[in-house]
Length: 408
Image (cartoon, rainbow, N blue to C red; front, side, top):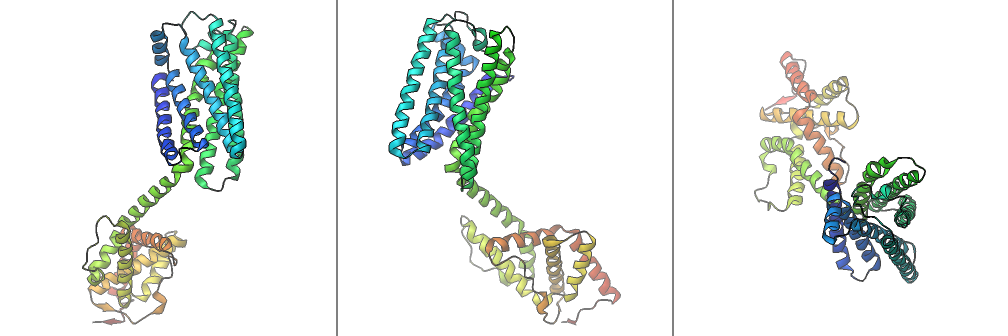
């Protein structure tokens, strides 16, 4: 990482933002132990990222006046995070009464582990400040070695448990956003496990006189940041992901409203009566969208007497020659029929009723109708096939091979 401080602090910020979202959920159910455990888990993960930055380590050491005290502070937070992960798993796995007992046992066990870490650090000697390579530099120092091993093993065990459970539940989850959140949590736990294993391998290599310090100082940090980000997002997605779906739907529908404009504008000019005089409040977007769809359909209906039955076959032939098929071809045919009808109406050209000209596409539901008319509108505005249909239609009429049935 070219700037480890910026990377770690940014990841910490992502974690704090995730915590803010989860605190909103906790506020709705302040006595829910699972939500409390998740909030604690996010807070500890974010705090560990912030404190692990070299600049933060230097600040802690300088402020306390003790070389490498930041290592104890960061590792204790990481072990506390491991405890919070085990507590969260307890509430996920067991009924409430049983989960509370398991949560208490895990909390006591990890509290004892943190106390042991403090004792080991106090008993050992680490006089030279090491902001980046503390683990490998002191890998053979008595008591400090055990201190390092304990925190790495505690983190690895918690990540293995979290990763296994999340992958298992992701395969069974019915709700899409829950499934995505579980998968992200599993990825985050996998990154955390890789972080621990890389550091463990580097430490053990030092015992045998091999310098694999790069695994600890360069490789492991690459996985620490994604671990926090993935877990923060993964824990938020199940409760907040539906808002993203609604937002995407709103953006999509507004885009569809704009895409309908070329077709609606042409029909409005050809048949002004389709547009009511009453104005819709600008804030009521859904009503404006419904009205635009209704006005387009009214305009298509008003143009039925101006639809040349021969346009359909011509558009179908040119569309197939252009390589179109399926709904794209049908949209081009419908767009050509409407565009020719608009021109014929302007010239007061009419045709006898033809029931075969009604287009059945779009489905009965509003979503299907919207998607279909958007496709028609885009073809109406941009399709070269539609332009070729109009050109050939005019040419054929001038040559007399195609004649309107009746002209007023």
